Image (cartoon, rainbow, N blue to C red; front, side):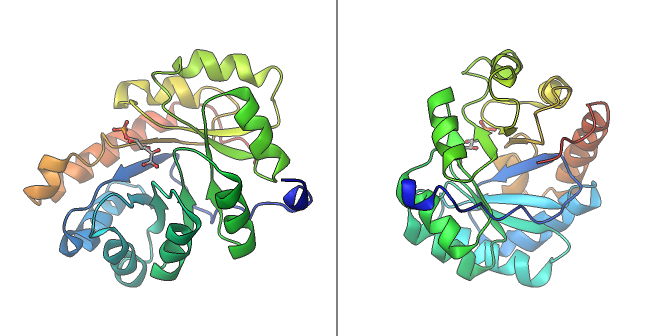
Length: 222
Ligand SMILES: O=C(O)C(=O)C[C@H](O)[C@H](O)COP(=O)(O)O
């Protein structure tokens, strides 16, 4: 990893939301309505996971038809997927983990990338590779805000996007930590609401999340 240690990861595009919806899109025809429903509730970014056949088409449609929402790709597991996501229009990418190949691919592609980590050693390796905003996954199983509070002692320079098992009720607990930039989660976009095209329900969940995030601490600088 020494060859990439001198490089610095591209910074995330600016968006105002501190709650990042993590979505599995089964039907690309729903993607634009979904993005607009989130936007109507005050959320201007979305993570479309590469866990469905429709994911890349969904990213492409959001990028093209709902550009007010910053679209990113989630569950990016390989350099090939990272390139596919970028080519589809993803403006950032996240992964549940990080491999040297992924870290290098994102640096070379200049695509803002949020690697997933679960231990201080993984975080230190990602930081060595030039990344300072990391995904803490799976956040709730790993001890939630208490763990990030403990890590802030030796690792105060790192910023976090905790994801995994988080619900609306926990948003403010995470955002109260000065090292937490945003939280991610699927609770904002339940599969049942997507299948029923219940965009009103998704807007209501987005609005609720935005209200809860307003009670957290000010966003930390990356
Ligand atoms: O796909 C990825 O890149 C992941 O790292 C996993 C997701 O972030 C979690 O699956 C979030 O889902 P919930 O736990 O339901 O909120």
